[in-house]
Amino acid sequence: MKTEDITIEGMHCASCEKNITRALAKQGVTVTSIAHNTGKALVKHEGIPREAMRQALRARGYDLADDAKERKEKSPRKAAREIPIETTVLTNGFLTLTVLLIVQTLLIYGIYSKVGDYKQQYFMPLIYLPIVIVTNIVALWHQRAYARNTSCMTGMMVGMTLGMMTGFGIGAIVGLTNGMFTGSIVGMIVGIIAGVYAGNCCGTMGIMEGMMAGLMGGTMGAMLTVMMVVDHVEWFLPILILTDTIILGFMMRMIYEEYHDAHDGAKDGLRPWPFTAVLAAGFIIMALISAIIIFTPKGIY
Image 1 (tube, helix red, strand yellow):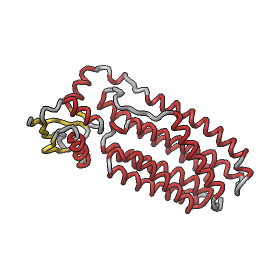
Image 2 (cartoon, helix red, strand yellow):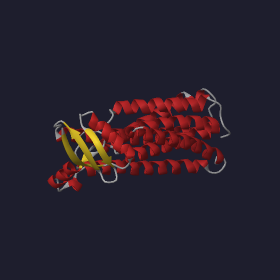
Image 3 (cartoon, rainbow, N blue to C red):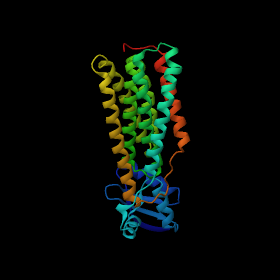
Image 4 (cartoon, rainbow, N blue to C red):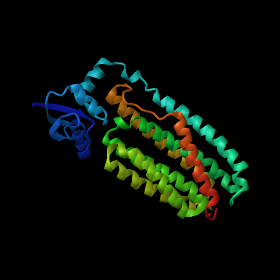
């Protein structure tokens, strides 16, 4: 049995220690002591290759410190490199938004305006809906591509951010047209799903953060637009969507920088969704929420 001291990059909390211990155990490595505040761990194994430990750690968003140092020394032009996945995600996101806006406009004039309890003032919320959906789907699309390489701390922050922003945006739109009850329920459900899906990369803590953020975002978004229904809500929604987009943009930058610093621009383990899957998901969500807006009981707007 070989005993070895290793230094691990990316540990931030006790949950990280547990994730690392489980990841190494699957490779036949026993962690006898580990401390996130120092980044040190004492391990025992039967001659497990260092490469196997490195791959197990990278799969969870961590790395061996000496391996990270070697990559940085071998790549002095690190800052000049770019990971093309951002270009792919943003380009396909723009195409998805374009398609959904065209489809939504056709649905409004071809179907929605002729059925249900449609009112002319619903046009604006129905057009803003695909913008909110695509903005959050793009951020989630980007996050899931990096999910296997996201640290515990970043994963919790991402789950909280996506849960809050998704719930708030959807809750605000549905709350405006259908009142606080329906808006809160729809916003909560969509926000919690997005938050949990984004946060589960770091385990139970990330799931909890995502659920709490979706709960708060959904109820607050609906409450705010109901309160503002007679006070320039038409001006508020575009400001809300712009702010949402900026926050999610910074979140994407945070994920990119963490990965870039740890992996020196390498693309190992990045798994973006197919464009067709994103387009289909966006259309289904848009159609379901639009149907709720048109066919369920309305608020005072």
